[in-house]
Length: 237
Ligand code: HEM
Ligand code: HEM
Image 1 (cartoon, helix red, strand yellow):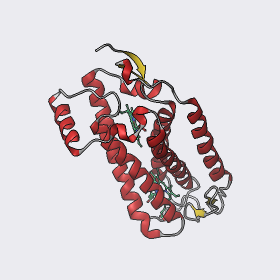
Image 2: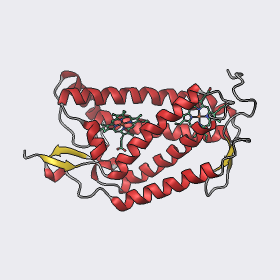
Image 3: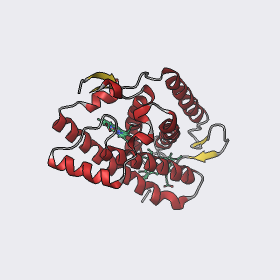
Image 4: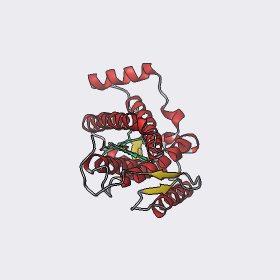
């Protein structure tokens, strides 16, 4: 098979990936390391709301995006997953240019959990305290899937001597030209950034640090993003 360096990941997918990875890490760090009554804590929720919106846009992109970003290109049955994992353990296995069955399952889990975290977070911020435990449990579950994701990336990188992390940055892999996509999708990238930026600016613009409240853009639903009280007073748990 003739191989050259060709474009695999469009720009919206790559930007989505790194904003999700950085945003989730930052939100989790703030939520775990800051006190619920501190002025920093609500920022984990604002970040989480931006990520939730971003995952919704990624879901749309899963239908209208370019070839390897579409969900139909990485929908695998349980059989393919088992075959893939067996191959990975035995050191053989077929090469996948887009997402392989292992990463595909992790990706659907990460997208679903991120939506679940944002959804329960929204309910918490509307005063439904019963969602605290599900909210935290899904955060732990997502941390576990991320650990598996990173283990998979490291294993693949070492075993196939292929820097797939770099591919998620520049979008390219060595492949048969018939598998390449023909555009980075600049227009959709701009639309993606404008929508997400408007959502984020609105959340931040409507945020009042004294009451720890903001409003959901366009929907006008008000949210309470942390407990009021003295800064740093350690009274949770
Ligand atoms: C330094 C840390 C990370 C590295 C090096 C990394 C690397 C990668 C790579 C190489 C892929 C493509 C996998 C494939 O070929 O199938 C990928 C996909 C993905 N990763 Fe990560 N990842 C990191 C952190 C994260 C984190 C923290 C999250 C979630 C919170 C995450 C979520 C995803 C998702 C959702 C995809 C699918 C992308 C899409 O098609 O939209 N990653 N990652
Ligand atoms: C990546 C996204 C998120 C992560 C990693 C995350 C993580 C967490 C964690 C670990 C806690 C427990 C903190 C503790 O017990 O000290 C928590 C609580 C909370 N989260 Fe999130 N969260 C996320 C998104 C959101 C969103 C989108 C909202 C709201 C819109 C939200 C609202 C809240 C609220 C209000 C609490 C306090 C619950 C209470 O004690 O009453 N979170 N979050």
